[in-house]
Length: 111
Length: 121
Image (tube, rainbow over all chains, first blue to last red; front, side):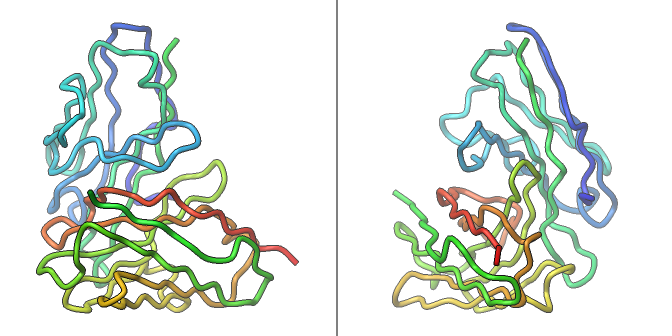
Protein backbone atom coordinates (compact mmCIF):
# COMPACT_ATOMS: atom_id res chain seq x y z
CA UNK A 1 0.00 0.00 0.00
CA UNK A 2 1.57 3.24 -1.18
CA UNK A 3 1.96 6.30 1.05
CA UNK A 4 0.82 8.61 -1.76
CA UNK A 5 -2.61 7.83 -3.20
CA UNK A 6 -3.28 7.88 -6.93
CA UNK A 7 -6.26 6.58 -8.90
CA UNK A 8 -5.29 3.24 -10.46
CA UNK A 9 -6.56 4.23 -13.88
CA UNK A 10 -7.52 7.19 -16.04
CA UNK A 11 -8.59 7.51 -19.64
CA UNK A 12 -9.37 10.01 -22.35
CA UNK A 13 -9.77 10.40 -26.07
CA UNK A 14 -7.22 12.10 -28.32
CA UNK A 15 -7.25 15.85 -27.84
CA UNK A 16 -8.90 15.72 -24.43
CA UNK A 17 -7.52 17.02 -21.15
CA UNK A 18 -6.90 14.51 -18.38
CA UNK A 19 -5.87 15.06 -14.78
CA UNK A 20 -4.27 12.59 -12.38
CA UNK A 21 -4.36 13.27 -8.66
CA UNK A 22 -1.84 12.43 -5.95
CA UNK A 23 -2.90 12.68 -2.32
CA UNK A 24 -0.52 12.68 0.62
CA UNK A 25 -0.10 14.18 4.05
CA UNK A 26 1.59 17.01 5.91
CA UNK A 27 4.85 15.05 6.23
CA UNK A 28 5.30 14.54 2.49
CA UNK A 29 3.38 16.61 -0.07
CA UNK A 30 2.38 19.14 2.57
CA UNK A 31 5.99 20.09 3.27
CA UNK A 32 8.01 18.97 0.24
CA UNK A 33 7.92 19.29 -3.52
CA UNK A 34 6.26 16.73 -5.78
CA UNK A 35 7.79 15.08 -8.83
CA UNK A 36 6.02 13.13 -11.55
CA UNK A 37 7.35 10.27 -13.66
CA UNK A 38 6.13 8.74 -16.90
CA UNK A 39 6.80 5.07 -17.56
CA UNK A 40 6.13 3.87 -21.08
CA UNK A 41 5.57 0.12 -21.47
CA UNK A 42 8.75 -1.88 -21.01
CA UNK A 43 10.94 1.12 -20.24
CA UNK A 44 12.48 2.84 -17.23
CA UNK A 45 10.59 5.76 -15.70
CA UNK A 46 11.35 9.23 -16.98
CA UNK A 47 11.16 12.52 -15.08
CA UNK A 48 8.12 14.43 -16.32
CA UNK A 49 7.53 17.22 -13.78
CA UNK A 50 9.79 18.36 -10.93
CA UNK A 51 9.40 20.86 -8.10
CA UNK A 52 5.60 20.64 -8.36
CA UNK A 53 5.24 22.35 -11.72
CA UNK A 54 8.55 22.51 -13.61
CA UNK A 55 9.12 20.69 -16.89
CA UNK A 56 12.55 19.31 -17.76
CA UNK A 57 13.93 20.24 -21.12
CA UNK A 58 12.23 18.24 -23.86
CA UNK A 59 8.94 17.61 -22.05
CA UNK A 60 6.05 19.11 -24.05
CA UNK A 61 4.10 21.95 -22.46
CA UNK A 62 1.00 19.76 -22.75
CA UNK A 63 2.14 18.35 -19.41
CA UNK A 64 1.68 20.51 -16.32
CA UNK A 65 1.77 20.00 -12.57
CA UNK A 66 0.27 21.73 -9.58
CA UNK A 67 0.18 21.36 -5.82
CA UNK A 68 -2.20 22.56 -3.15
CA UNK A 69 -1.87 21.63 0.50
CA UNK A 70 -1.35 17.89 0.77
CA UNK A 71 -2.41 17.07 -2.81
CA UNK A 72 -0.88 17.40 -6.24
CA UNK A 73 -2.13 16.97 -9.77
CA UNK A 74 -0.71 16.18 -13.18
CA UNK A 75 -2.62 17.52 -16.16
CA UNK A 76 -2.19 16.40 -19.74
CA UNK A 77 -3.87 18.50 -22.39
CA UNK A 78 -4.23 17.68 -26.07
CA UNK A 79 -4.00 13.97 -25.23
CA UNK A 80 -2.04 11.89 -27.73
CA UNK A 81 -1.81 8.15 -28.23
CA UNK A 82 1.84 8.18 -27.19
CA UNK A 83 0.83 9.48 -23.76
CA UNK A 84 -0.52 6.03 -22.92
CA UNK A 85 1.70 5.05 -19.99
CA UNK A 86 1.91 4.67 -16.23
CA UNK A 87 2.34 7.85 -14.23
CA UNK A 88 3.80 8.07 -10.72
CA UNK A 89 4.09 10.89 -8.19
CA UNK A 90 6.91 11.01 -5.64
CA UNK A 91 7.95 13.18 -2.73
CA UNK A 92 10.26 13.21 0.26
CA UNK A 93 8.58 12.24 3.53
CA UNK A 94 9.94 13.86 6.69
CA UNK A 95 8.64 11.19 9.04
CA UNK A 96 10.68 8.27 10.43
CA UNK A 97 14.16 9.66 9.63
CA UNK A 98 13.07 10.60 6.11
CA UNK A 99 12.45 8.58 2.99
CA UNK A 100 11.15 8.99 -0.54
CA UNK A 101 7.56 7.86 -1.07
CA UNK A 102 5.85 7.03 -4.35
CA UNK A 103 2.25 6.88 -5.38
CA UNK A 104 0.78 3.58 -6.50
CA UNK A 105 0.78 4.68 -10.12
CA UNK A 106 -1.98 5.56 -12.59
CA UNK A 107 -2.41 3.68 -15.85
CA UNK A 108 -3.49 6.17 -18.52
CA UNK A 109 -5.37 4.74 -21.47
CA UNK A 110 -5.94 6.75 -24.63
CA UNK A 111 -9.22 5.51 -26.08
CA UNK B 1 25.64 13.15 -20.84
CA UNK B 2 24.63 11.48 -17.59
CA UNK B 3 24.16 7.71 -17.67
CA UNK B 4 23.67 5.01 -15.06
CA UNK B 5 23.80 1.24 -15.48
CA UNK B 6 22.80 -1.44 -13.00
CA UNK B 7 24.57 -4.79 -12.81
CA UNK B 8 24.21 -7.88 -10.69
CA UNK B 9 22.86 -11.43 -10.67
CA UNK B 10 19.67 -12.17 -12.55
CA UNK B 11 18.80 -15.04 -10.22
CA UNK B 12 19.28 -15.45 -6.49
CA UNK B 13 18.07 -18.12 -4.13
CA UNK B 14 15.86 -17.46 -1.10
CA UNK B 15 17.83 -16.40 2.01
CA UNK B 16 20.81 -15.32 -0.10
CA UNK B 17 22.24 -11.79 -0.12
CA UNK B 18 21.80 -9.69 -3.26
CA UNK B 19 24.57 -7.31 -4.31
CA UNK B 20 23.83 -4.77 -7.04
CA UNK B 21 26.22 -2.24 -8.54
CA UNK B 22 25.29 1.06 -10.15
CA UNK B 23 28.01 2.40 -12.45
CA UNK B 24 27.50 5.96 -13.57
CA UNK B 25 29.13 8.61 -15.72
CA UNK B 26 28.60 12.28 -16.47
CA UNK B 27 28.58 13.43 -12.86
CA UNK B 28 30.61 12.97 -9.70
CA UNK B 29 29.29 11.73 -6.38
CA UNK B 30 31.89 13.94 -4.71
CA UNK B 31 30.10 17.05 -6.00
CA UNK B 32 28.15 18.84 -3.29
CA UNK B 33 24.45 17.94 -3.38
CA UNK B 34 24.73 14.87 -5.60
CA UNK B 35 22.96 11.66 -4.60
CA UNK B 36 22.23 8.23 -6.04
CA UNK B 37 19.10 6.26 -5.14
CA UNK B 38 17.95 2.69 -5.66
CA UNK B 39 14.33 2.04 -6.60
CA UNK B 40 12.64 -1.26 -7.43
CA UNK B 41 9.50 -2.38 -9.25
CA UNK B 42 7.99 -5.86 -8.90
CA UNK B 43 6.47 -7.16 -12.15
CA UNK B 44 3.22 -5.32 -12.85
CA UNK B 45 3.44 -3.32 -9.64
CA UNK B 46 4.37 0.17 -8.46
CA UNK B 47 7.74 1.78 -7.89
CA UNK B 48 9.26 1.45 -4.42
CA UNK B 49 12.18 3.58 -3.22
CA UNK B 50 14.86 1.62 -1.37
CA UNK B 51 17.85 3.73 -0.40
CA UNK B 52 19.88 6.85 -1.07
CA UNK B 53 23.49 7.87 -0.56
CA UNK B 54 24.73 11.42 -0.93
CA UNK B 55 28.04 13.14 -1.70
CA UNK B 56 28.74 13.48 2.03
CA UNK B 57 28.23 9.73 2.59
CA UNK B 58 24.92 10.27 4.39
CA UNK B 59 22.57 7.35 3.87
CA UNK B 60 18.80 7.00 4.00
CA UNK B 61 16.78 3.81 3.82
CA UNK B 62 13.21 2.71 3.29
CA UNK B 63 11.65 2.34 6.71
CA UNK B 64 10.17 -1.05 5.85
CA UNK B 65 13.43 -2.51 4.49
CA UNK B 66 16.17 -0.73 6.42
CA UNK B 67 17.20 -3.78 8.45
CA UNK B 68 18.04 -5.62 5.22
CA UNK B 69 19.68 -2.87 3.16
CA UNK B 70 23.16 -1.40 2.99
CA UNK B 71 24.19 1.28 0.50
CA UNK B 72 27.77 2.35 -0.14
CA UNK B 73 29.78 4.27 -2.70
CA UNK B 74 33.17 4.15 -4.37
CA UNK B 75 33.69 7.68 -5.65
CA UNK B 76 36.91 6.81 -7.48
CA UNK B 77 35.10 4.13 -9.51
CA UNK B 78 31.85 6.11 -9.94
CA UNK B 79 29.92 3.25 -8.39
CA UNK B 80 27.18 2.80 -5.81
CA UNK B 81 26.55 -0.64 -4.33
CA UNK B 82 23.34 -1.89 -2.72
CA UNK B 83 23.18 -5.08 -0.70
CA UNK B 84 19.93 -6.68 0.39
CA UNK B 85 20.04 -9.60 2.79
CA UNK B 86 17.70 -12.55 3.26
CA UNK B 87 16.16 -12.40 -0.20
CA UNK B 88 12.63 -13.76 -0.65
CA UNK B 89 10.52 -14.45 -3.76
CA UNK B 90 8.55 -11.27 -3.02
CA UNK B 91 11.77 -9.34 -3.69
CA UNK B 92 11.59 -10.35 -7.35
CA UNK B 93 11.66 -7.04 -9.19
CA UNK B 94 13.44 -4.79 -11.62
CA UNK B 95 15.97 -2.76 -9.65
CA UNK B 96 16.83 0.73 -10.86
CA UNK B 97 19.43 3.26 -9.80
CA UNK B 98 18.93 6.95 -10.49
CA UNK B 99 20.70 10.24 -9.92
CA UNK B 100 19.17 12.60 -7.42
CA UNK B 101 20.05 15.83 -5.65
CA UNK B 102 19.96 16.76 -1.97
CA UNK B 103 17.84 19.82 -2.75
CA UNK B 104 15.00 17.48 -3.80
CA UNK B 105 15.75 13.83 -3.21
CA UNK B 106 12.45 12.80 -4.81
CA UNK B 107 13.83 14.11 -8.12
CA UNK B 108 15.32 11.22 -10.10
CA UNK B 109 16.94 12.04 -13.42
CA UNK B 110 18.06 10.08 -15.25
CA UNK B 111 17.33 6.45 -14.41
CA UNK B 112 19.33 3.42 -15.39
CA UNK B 113 17.72 0.85 -17.66
CA UNK B 114 17.08 -1.45 -14.69
CA UNK B 115 18.08 -5.02 -13.95
CA UNK B 116 15.58 -7.81 -13.32
CA UNK B 117 16.32 -9.92 -10.27
CA UNK B 118 14.38 -13.14 -9.78
CA UNK B 119 14.35 -14.86 -6.40
CA UNK B 120 13.72 -18.56 -6.77
CA UNK B 121 15.13 -21.84 -5.57
